[in-house]
Length: 277
Ligand code: SPD
Image 1 (tube, rainbow, N blue to C red):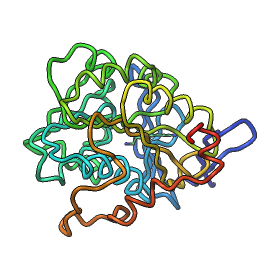
Image 2 (cartoon, protein in one colour):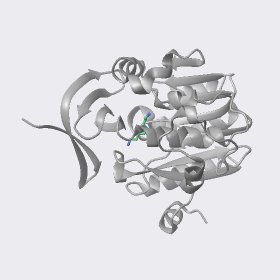
Image 3 (cartoon, rainbow, N blue to C red):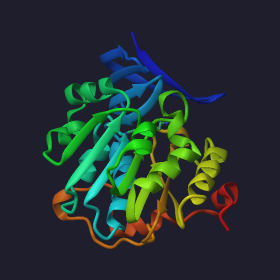
Image 4 (cartoon, protein in one colour):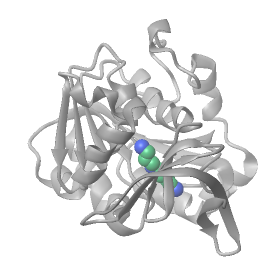
C-alpha cells in the first residue's frame, strides 16, 4: 500500500510526497514533529504538517540563507542563528573560518535532539567547539541578551505557531540592537509566488529598522511555489556585494560568487508586489 504525506500550500494547491518509511514522530510541547524517508525528496523534516527541510534541496536553502550575509560581512566573528534546530544553517555558518562562535537559539529542544539522531547530515556541527546551543524563545533571547553579534540569521518556520513572533516588527528592532556596528541580519521571508503579500510586509518591517534592506530569492522545490525569498537588513555593507569567495573545501552545491549576484536580480512583478522601486 502506498503512503503519502500531503502539505497544503494554499487552499486549492497541495504537494504530496510518497513515504518510504516513517523514521520518527513526536508531539512536542510546541508542535507535531515528523521525520520521513520519502521516495523523491529523501529524508524530510516536517513540523505541524509543513515541510521544513529535505535531503534533496536543503543545500539550496541553507547555502542561500547563510553564505550571502556571511560573505558580504567584512569579518563575521560572532553569529546568532534564531531557529534552525535541524542544524543546517549552523553547519554552513561554521564553514567560515572567521566565525569564532555561533549561537543557535531554538524554542524547541526536541527538534534539536531529533536532528542529532535522525538528521546527521544537517546536524553534524552541533558538536563543533564553536557552537553554543540554547533552547529558548528567540524573541525573548534577542530582547534580553547582552551578547552582540556580527551576523544574525533567522531560520524560522512559517509565520504561524511557534514562529509567529519571529516576524513581528519588535523582533527586527531587537535584532538591530544586538548587532555590532556594521552588522547584518538575514531572514527567510516566505514565498514570492504563494504569499507575495507576506514577503512585502516582512520587507517593509525590516526596511523600517535597517538603513540597507535587500531582498533575494532562490529556488527551493519543496517549499510553496518552489521559489523562496530571503531579506537582509544591514547596518553597514551592502549584502548584494560579496567581500570574499567561498573555499573549495566547503564543497558547496549551490552558492558561488556568480550566483550571489544573480540571486539579487528581481523580476518586475516581484518588485511591484513587494513595492521595490
Ligand atoms: N514553508 C517552510 C519554510 C521553512 C523555512 N525554514 C526551514 C528551516 C530549515 N532549517
